[in-house]
Image (cartoon, rainbow, N blue to C red; front, top):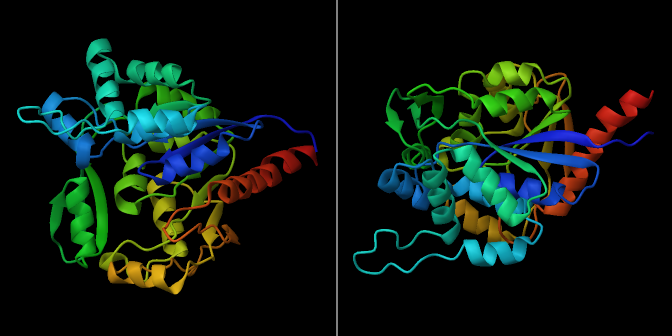
Length: 325
């Protein structure tokens, strides 16, 4: 087998995408690109969007920290929150979110601000915002009700309403730089991440499907460890494959599913939140299923190194061995 560096695109947001790319960055045979959702409306990111009129910086910041050569020190500094002093509307925000927002305001270009942060942190990969046009995540539930906003969509789902449709308001387009770079990827990795507020929305901007259609290599989905509240009771890896395939307009080729569980105490704690281990379910024909124990510790987090090795195993088998036969 002849080894060569593979150029891969990792799609998502929240805490799942940084965990994935933070493990993959150590592989010298991978050139890692993070393609990040930009429709966060909760927490510090949502507040900065409202207060300063900037794009939500949180998911991009977490990816930049994950790709930093000195991740530990960068996280210690840039994830520290400013004290909430009287008359200080910026109190409670992380230093990193403020830094990225200030760089955007200074340059007038969010992508330039992201590249500046990458340089500052000496990141080992590229970070692409999927769009720089402001939009809000909207959801329709099976009972016919609708809601707007990332947090509100999650709340409705946690209350037991099943999501039937997700869209963005207003409609937005893929960033031209991302549209140009995505077709060059040897493979696409999706997830893990909040399914309806991180994974599905990233594929909704106009032009994303066309960019993904030009990728010759495999589409790999990393499923979550748990379902996400009452509204996802019974949701499976097979259902995730079907929904993502529909969202991207092409089949998912490989799905990576966790089969390891923590202790009974941790499972009971998550059961109180109506979250349960994700089962495999009925996976569509043609999609390869890779299983393994990826749960690390008592909290629902993928083990970075285990996941990184699993992804490398899939990519080397499909892209390197296939090209050498």
